[in-house]
Amino acid sequence: MQNSRSSDAADDPRNHIVLSPHPWVAGQSDIGQRHHRNEDSIALAASEEQGARAVLVVCDGVSTSTDSQLASQAASVAAMERLSQPMPRRGVAQDVWLETAAQAFADAAQAGSAAAAETGGADDPTPPSCTMAAAIVEDNLIVGGNVGDSRVYWIPASGPERAVQLGSDDSMAHELIRRGVPRENAENAPNAHAITRWLGRNAPKDLTPRLAHLLAEEPGWLIVCSDGLWNYCSAPADLWDLVQRVRAARGDDPTEITDGLVGFANASGGADNISVVIAALAPQPA
Image (cartoon, rainbow, N blue to C red; front, side, top):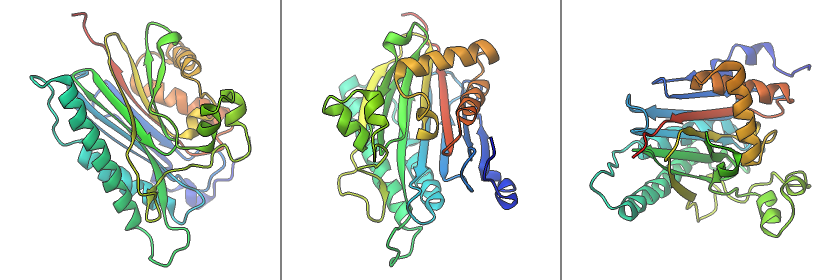
């Protein structure tokens, strides 16, 4: 497929980023096939011990705003800084810890929005803005959520029936789904991708992330991604199937899985920037 990358864009190191601080976590962000620049940004931090601690962040610049790549970069850094602050849960009641995590997510969204707002001029009618999706792993307890339409998924090894999206989109498509419109119809409707909340100078007042949590009691993959991936594989069960196909072809290394998912999105058309961050969890039976 013919793509629209210019020679200048091809030289931008941000157009393809690979992160893997430890073998059980990895992330990739790619320009895709149609855009002149990568307006997504990813951030990733993890402990050496698998399942002990990880923070995964994906911010997707709103393409109708000015310099949205600056907003996503600033927001991802600010959100990561807040979510990376220690939140040990050993010896803490789970409901108390979840309240602490929820406050951290709320603070991260506000910090990300403020950072995005600072990247634009005061008189810009379309100031830089972005979405945010993030997840925390703490001793195999997962909290994930979003502001906007980037997503968090849990893909358990056991089967597609237990795959789930953590959080829910702030989009017109989600509003249609909430009203009973089938997912495929809603996500292909006019203005389906119009978002109802975002980060930046003109963001709505309520930026409380839409959160969900679960305890990973079996092996699986925590995935945070931009719509550059899920546009082509939206339903959790479909993403489960895609992950299994990538694993069959490329193995279980998270870097290989992220590369396979980015490759799938590009082969499917690559109409948007593509960002995927993964944590592979392998909890031991109690």
